[in-house]
Image 1: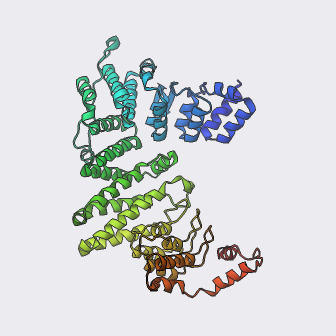
Image 2: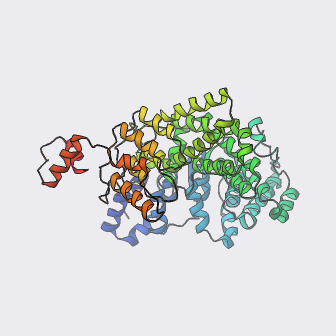
Image 3: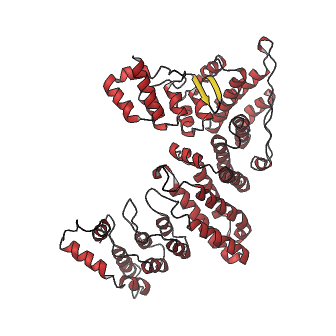
Length: 531
């Protein structure tokens, strides 16, 4: 293979150009490219390590599945001023916070071949301390993804043995425990890191007694090592804590889960990790840390009985405030980061659930608490244009949530939300979403009237050709025939009888007689086609 081909190959990987890689396969043949995928660049990196370093998950997956790269092939890895001479891709993914890649590599590994991986680290040209760090971080990753007893603790034991050994007259390298800050003590329940081989052996034989203890140790180990190059909590350690919070939630230990979730959200807020949210979204993890944390919190508060919810107001209010602060830190739609990269829709869903929970607490709150809630709600609504959702806007989300109070919709309209904006999937307007035929619930006629008064059109069609009026008439018919009501619902009938603007009638006539509208301004042309 030529040096130019090798240069082009690594250039395509560094840039994340999938199209260029596919063209190279077409030009040179797959077998040639599989051979090329085994080589190193001028920096001593394998293609897989290069993809990890440059945070290209699609290239990473392509190299593994299409070019059949060896996921155990060691390589040099330079990250944040630290030079790792020979490390496996798994360690590189951990150190660079590539959670999806970490999980992919662990899932692909044959756990029975762990000894081969350990041997490759022990025989590498890394320093003794780097070998220890590598084994401890990989052990934490195995524990995180449920391979603790088979791989995680054995990695830690090997690291501890290496610490205690004295090759060629070298001194032992005892653990120096990480100084846990005051804010970190609460979520981990004042736990201390295991320091001796005997303690590790005890953990190995008793891990089933408390899975939370194993995850706590994984957090302490990884936090101690990674904080040396990345001050503060990072994505990998936060994911461990999130996993721990989910374990506690499943066991019904709600106070433990809330403490950890609060710490995670405060970490996002304090460090203003715009770039971290971007990386997390790019990775497309099944349940991102932030979204998963909101999910745990709302599920816990939904399980709390109404009589106890007023006592929880301060806690939930704090969480809601943090959620709004994180939203403020989000890059807006004018930035170069593409909109579709943010997993915001689920995030907004859970924040709207928080609003619903707080609204249910209002009757039990004093004037100061009510004022605090409404002030924060107003701040959230003003973020309307920050939530640049892939398929629909914040007003769509609110109208599609049956538990959202009508005044939230009113605030969104006052903030400038368009009552006629179609979503990108079905062309449903906010009015369509409110009028959906859901016979198990009462129709929110107050919210529909609000949207109509704000300029909402009840005769716009969605992709199925259905108008809001069609939906209302169907609901009215269903109530008369199925529920055998004696007379039509007067509120629904009033909406059905609403006088339509002259512009709507003109648009329908133009459509009916197939009049050419191509010379009209694009906004008017769109208006006609939507009637």
